Image (cartoon, rainbow, N blue to C red; front, top):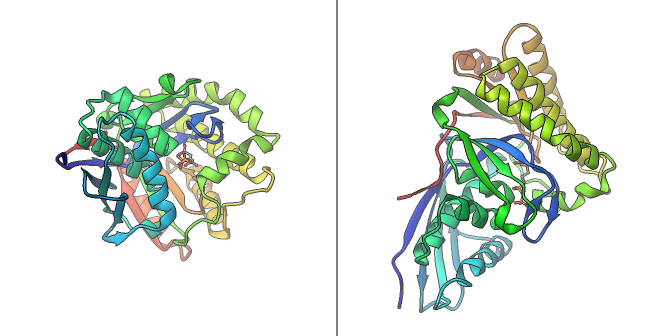
Length: 324
Ligand code: DP6
């Protein structure tokens, strides 16, 4: 029997306290807790239909047949869902992003959050938020943070059962805005999955992990108190510490380009001149510039004057995954 299709929408998220390195790579149990905000303006919509007449899974992303590596990752993820189905069927998966994949905005979080919700529903499983977050984590670690709404903390746990994300403030709590300054649109050479596996080779990783609970508590408190100065200090420190680990891994990973560093300097100059703004950078050269709603026009104006900035995407805090 073929079951009805299900569709879900999820937002990517930007981490303020970063996830880098796993205790268990296969289960994606992270070495440290992390904290993020969902990005309302960006979304992935995915529908899944399990069918008895398919010989293999079929994946379309933004209207195109997916590359073999992407299909393999999605099929391996669907196998986890299929384990719980009485009849193991292959699926047609149709996924659309409202942001260009080539823009260097991480899409694996929204992709696996939407896929987890759509696939589990299509399979007839009734998962609560915790179970859904645990499932999404198996596809991409950061995807577990795109399940709950607003400002989210990933409780790292030590086993599959206790590694999932929870919301600690709704999207409307603080009008924080992420301006994503794109300086390079090409695909990164070493993706996050390969990067996580190198984290332990850096002598700085243990110091980063040990100090993480302190940074996370300060960041959560700054968000709850809407204290931008405290928030800026801890967010930049955490991003810099992750990149220090990346840069001192064997082999080393250097995601920054000249334009990335130029932006880091600019952000600090603007802040020293009184503009409340800070940066955070993921596993790529593009820079996420964070500010409060009342300062967006000024910050965006500054970014648009920079020759190195090819495009700017803007988003406030968003909700959690939703079935449609
Ligand atoms: C630098 O969640 O993309 O963005 O589990 O291998 O898919 P996989 O890794 P991923 O790693 C995200 C790394 C990061 C920091 C963060 O989002 O916390």
